[in-house]
Image 1 (cartoon, rainbow, N blue to C red):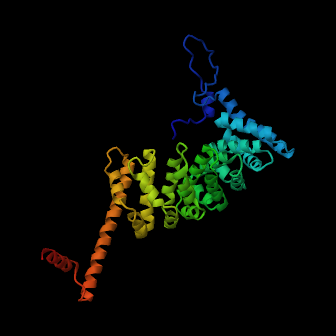
Image 2 (image 1 turned 60 degrees about the vertical axis):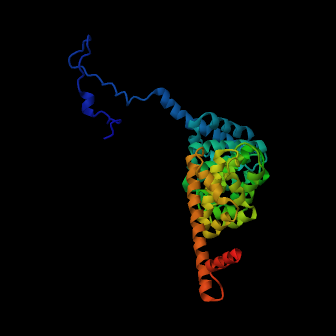
Length: 378
């Protein structure tokens, strides 16, 4: 039995005579009602607060519904945004009262201000009522449209909030227009906040492996590396390389990396001093490792084709000042590169031996070296 819960008193308990309080008289045969247990006593103030939240939420939603019918919803939407921001306890009641579809309808409405307020309110509500948002009909379509408006940063942040629940990653990843809108937001480079929110949303999308090939087909690799190479805003490169590291975990991305010289760019970031922050350096190493794991021998060959690749990775693996995460990624990548190099040398040696055995007129590498040595000595 739960020790924090107590059964209600029985009828017999209610009829039991109570002992006299110290210093007070009781009449013989009089019956008194026992005081309720403190844990059963409900604070009138708490009870009132619990009842007020749903009532306030219903009033706000009712006002929005009436205002929307009159095509003048801006003030009502702003009121819901303010309430959902200031009072976390009203967010779930707002969703229960039906605020989500009404707010979603305002995202693509005639009022830009109302659209921004609606997106911000949906973001606030998503923190406490993520499931209600995810199951609301038409919400993802409305967010897709909002990603192309002044409400883009709130819309992208709302998508990221939904993606915090693993169960929603496949559903959102299947919305190709939504993903395309997020990638387009990277190319548009609006405010820093909007770009960072889009990157966070894309990171959440890429955490679900089947979504990575879709992102590659939408041009996400090109857009991400463009940010890495040319965007100097604080924190953008860190976030962009984090997404690159996730997207690199699919075989389809190797060709996209070739188009933008992605491997060389990442190796430049891995070099000491190549990245502005240690986190960006870690992300670059993680991206190369994921590329090699997903792409196999062709990906390894792509990395080894860059001059000094092994040495660059080894420097990170042996850097005492590097973070444990960065060193671990570099060590794993270095093992993969060294193993592939040894395997390639063995295959070359086997090929040369087979060539010598099949054609007696071809000298073995060893005999050719000996002849060269004699010629020099003579």
